[in-house]
Image 1: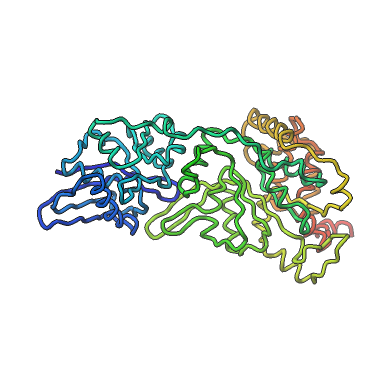
Image 2 (image 1 turned 60 degrees about the vertical axis):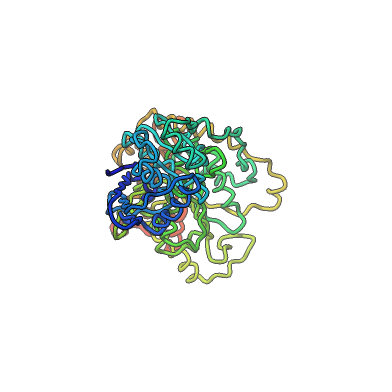
Length: 514
């Protein structure tokens, strides 16, 4: 008799359905596992046999063949243990397998038969919903994240014996909501914008970035507050919606970053990878394939400190991420798409020593060295940052005597109003739709800025997008010259590139003047 049990496996941040088939055949006693199991799955034979003995069961002395279908999908991890154990017991008649029909079984087994938590429970439960399964049985350790799932009966167990008795109808298992620990009270944010002294221009840019979801590049000397600004951006971002929170939690569950012992309290993530991170660490990879930093920061903030110090091939991967909001990792046996729509905030010094343009410190860098340093960031990547903002050094007397700035909650209220205005307005399409929302004087000013600064077509559109966000913050229906002028100020590196080579008129205009 062929017995089938429902399991699942992770591929990136998504789960795929896996059917465990067991055939008890004639021949010499054996335990064969097929279906592209990787080492962690192959080792489940040892764990399962020990757990069955601890629970008082013995495998039949027959030939046992287990197939993990589909056979072309690599399987990894220890989450198959429970499903394999139940499939073996049902095939040998030790438990009633009818109750396991339409039930997703997840969990790692200890040698004593205890059921341990596994990563990726949340995306696997979402897969069970999509597949139309009736229920799932998971370890109690995963109850907190499982409690986030609605419209699916999720039961929790502490050991294998609990599951077998539930299958035979001798006991009931608690639901995930019953087994999950009590959520803690909402903790106050550990950082706040009011802790910053000075930097009014940078604070304003941070508010604009939060209101419009714009990518931000901070340029300033060491110690000017670039990292402090970036770490306070999440405090002025709206709380994630339920759908966003579930997606964020599923990603972190697949990466094994959710704490088993605590309730899942979902906030927008803040990721700050070190500049020595590899391309695989940034976009995802490894064996088994896991999400990278751009996916772990999805729905939150990806902060890249010392941007020019990152390897060129690493930061160039951001170009697609910043435009498309997803990453595709191609492997020999799989092609995986993962969501990757973080708000990118980067910081850099104006030169290798960090003091170019600083009136209080002498820059020791030769011009060629400064140009080499800046050239580590390609023009196409630089173009994808909506705002380039100067963060000058704060004087000592400002640190002592400047009063604290606005608290994050006050800035957040303005950000929420601006986002509500954007939602009421509806999505704005391409360039034509943007220009229709600007008055004639604003467009003429932007045209002159493009001529003098040499903005690209992408820079032109981004300046209009930032100006639209500014009009939302000010409560205006039309983009005016004030919004365009402020948006142009946020193209700092475009201005500097022109200043370095000198502002030149187009050749046609110079000939007309002659």
